[in-house]
Length: 314
Length: 240
Image 1 (cartoon, chains in turn yellow, brown):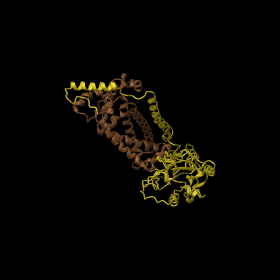
Image 2 (cartoon, one colour):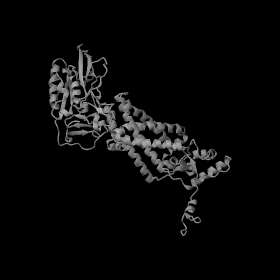
Image 3 (cartoon, helix red, strand yellow):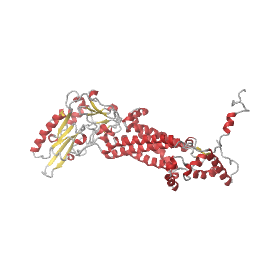
Image 4 (spheres, one colour):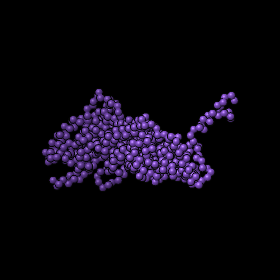
């Protein structure tokens, strides 16, 4: 949890209160220039180091990815893709640093049922506040990028914080600080977009005609952006979503289904009440009790039962 | 011994006398003790599931987690309530499914739904142990509980988190919540029917209903048991 004032919280999960509006921080962003990445994993080390996490020793799956997936303790990960470009016939080694994208419209935050377990600061960083996390895993379903991981130790969700604690005191995230090639940059979102533009221009001049900035509009833009050589095909980069957005299933579940659900349950109760005050109770009349007794005794006589023949009033 | 109406006065007991004038009522067994216990265990679990589930369904009701010891405890206990309910409901199902098979009378009853809700019992066909509404509750709950059990396992992160794709889990979560709100709405109607149709609660509390109740609402069933009851004795173990 970062050292932020409550003045700086723009969105808070499962909360209906209006967030504070009087102060707006400048939006920040991390720009990851995939074309400059050499896959050294310094960012991964820096992340573990700064956040003081040591992941368990894993298993080599025969690829460079190490660990092979994000975990509750590994919040960032280099994903390596070998791509044979059919146009140039070149083998391209696409290395993408995976981690939380810090969406402007975060699916995790939308899905989260626990008040204040996920917040978005006014600088755009999306942070998990673990003390409020109940471990339901809804954030996992809400995220369009498959980022949050639930710890089997404490049943809480974890992901990249964009080093919100460092950013709060004017420092760049640890990964950006450690990157030896300047592939990871950090600054205001505006500055990062401008920076990306010069990089895209440069890449285009080098033959990457489809180079571009990945700042997907489907989630309102992100606060972690990529410069991609093949911005027309983001999925080349270890399955980076081409057009990420909050799943319609999640949107419906948190939108229409909630309204429908409360309405259906409320309607059932209200309909019952008004039925009662109009139609009234359905009561047995004394004649029916008598008819029942009579029928019963007739039936029993027919059955040849003697004695105990009378109905048994309690 | 000066007050005539005193109950201790052996000679004059007007209170008792007044009671004796009330119409005589016979009682017929409808549910055995085990069946009632089975029903109420299911009902209690359903209530607990409703409260803990709604807490995670909408932020407006998150405060319900306080009933279960907080958010984490609610998240942890809810699936176990669900497993217990599934077991309990399976027992109910095994006991009652045969009696809930739809028949022609149900079609007739459903056509007369207008008479049903306006208490015009005289216009309805004679019915067996259950009417189409009750059968609807039975099969509705059967289907919805089955859906909630299966989808509930899919989204039970603690044990089954990594076994299915995230897309599958999204479907499961949506189906789980929709099934839940429909099931809750059905139970609201189910509870209301028990209030509306007087004398019904007794079946689930005491195990018996009055002869008049059976005669009015489930005459075919009453005709079956009226004689049989005497042959088998007061308590019908099969509750049929």
